[in-house]
Structures are given as C-alpha cells and as structure tokens.
Image (cartoon, rainbow, N blue to C red; front, side):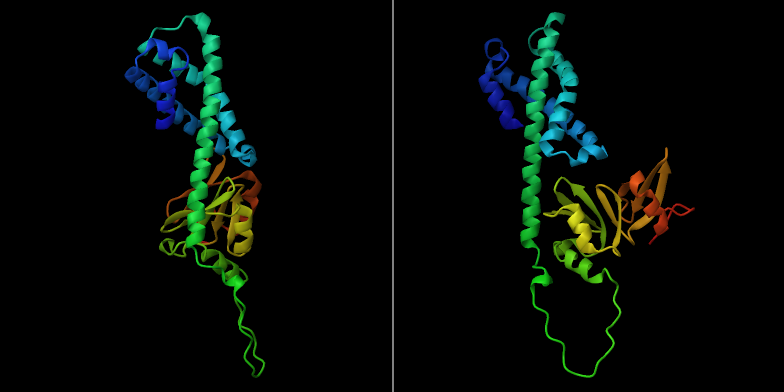
Length: 270
C-alpha cells in the first residue's frame, strides 16, 4: 500500500501532479490508499462469508468487492478532493464514480493477490517444516508366531495421526477445527492456528469420518471440540473449547443434530 501511494504521488494522476506539490501529493494518495485498503478488506471479509461466493477465485471475489466499493470510495474521494483541492461540482460526479470504481477494482485485485501470496508463503513454510508422513515409510513385516487377534482401534485413529504430523510441534495435537481459506486449510488447535497447503475436503478425507464433522462448506469440527451451542435468529453456532465460534449452515444442521451437539441444553462435549 505504501509503495502504491508513493508511485501514484510521483505520477500524479487525475491532475494532482499539476495542482499539488509532491509532499501534499504523498499525503493525498496515502490517505486515499489507506481508505481504499480498509474499505476493500471490509468488503472482502463480508463477501467471504457468503457461501455461494466462496467457490469463486480470489480475483473474482476481489473484483466484486471493488465494484461494490466504487460508490463509497467515490464519496471518500470527493471528501479528499474538497480537503486538498476544491469541492467537485455535481456534473463531475459520474466521471469521479467511474474513475474510483476502476481504481478500487484494481486495488482490490492487487490486495487479493498479495494476501494470496502471503498465504502461500506461510502455508509452504508450514509444509516444509512438518515431518514426513509415515505413509511413505515401509511397514515392518509381522513377527512370526501364533496367530493373535488384532487389537481394536478407532477407525479414524491412523488417518488423524497422519494428518496431525503435518502440524508444527508448537501447536500440539489437540485438534479443534479446520477452516477453508481459498485453496488452503487453516488448522485450529488449543495452542493456535496455522495454514497448510491442502484443500479442506482433502484434509477432511485424510482425517477420516470418525474424527469429526463438516458443519459448513468452510468448516470442519473435531468430535470433542464443542463446548457450547448458540442459537440466534434461526442461526446455529458452535462454540469450541478455545472460544472460537463456528457457523453451522442449513445443509449440515441435521448432521449436527445427529451428533448430539445441538442438544436441548445447548452444550455438548462430543
């Protein structure tokens, strides 16, 4: 954002190069970019909560945020113009709206790509530091001897163990939830969270069906993670042991009821 403000101040588009000296242009564009940044981040967060839009690519969602931000950004630009140069006449509003919409779309897509690159870098670092999966190691042959009955293990124990080996040691192994962030999964434990280079559905498949339940297109919750249930305005929210709140979509509500999490007293510990 700072680099963009400096570049715009040096170029001086929309007549700012002629009307304003360089120090004032720097303030002008820094203020404009800061307002645009916070506006785009707020719109992006709101759009990411709309389930049908979560399948869109990052650039598409951010372009939508830019289009929606065109009108409020035009109001911000009009105010900045009035402060630094002169109030714009009403006849100039259509051109201002067009210019700010184009600028906010470009800014929004740039922000989205920067965030995406940061997520990739963090997820890649977490993947590199994780120890290799034991799936790649050959299993030792069984020892010769009298036939013995195999011990009974939970069906999901081995897959869950394999998945947990992907996590940095400092996060522990008390898995609470998975959250989809674009093409990555954010893993929540009692000690914090991290990103891994893995799609949510692949992570859920590796964990196995007995480890927990998908409760939303973007959320999976471990079977022993739920501390309470909140109901408000017809919406269901799971409160996890770390106080993280996870929305339950209508698609998965019956499955949540079947687990007993949505009990009559609004709390369950799986």
